[in-house]
Length: 157
Image 1 (cartoon, rainbow, N blue to C red):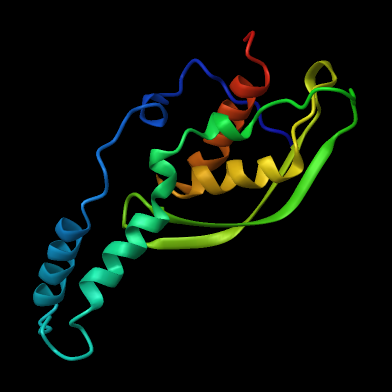
Image 2: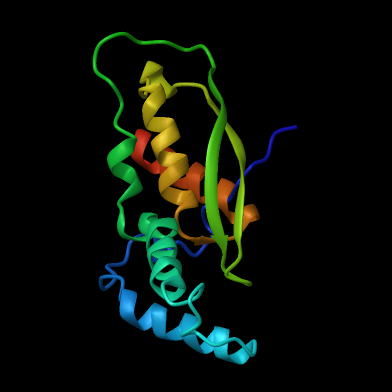
């Protein structure tokens, strides 16, 4: 089954905005509040470093919010091809923006080079990683990658 995506009804301004740096201490404060809200003591031996570790985890899992995904999709000069290119089983890890819960999985990317312009296979995996490392919805992840790939590989559109 193939899916056609409309560029007209998508709001992708969040993909192109500048964001301030991650505030690890502010995240850690929030984690401390969550622990207290759960009835835990954030000063307990097993939890003392938890706020810092959680803050660092969120910074890593959202690092794609501060990356320009277009940098990964640059058509290669030289040979021209018109066969389908497929990369399967790309590991992704993200955070659901509705629950701030991590989700992991695998994705597959396939494309037919337009006008024979190809993109390096490793760049497709980097594209998936950049978009998955954002506050994300599983359903939007595909659309974000498709639109960015289309814009970057076909600059005349």
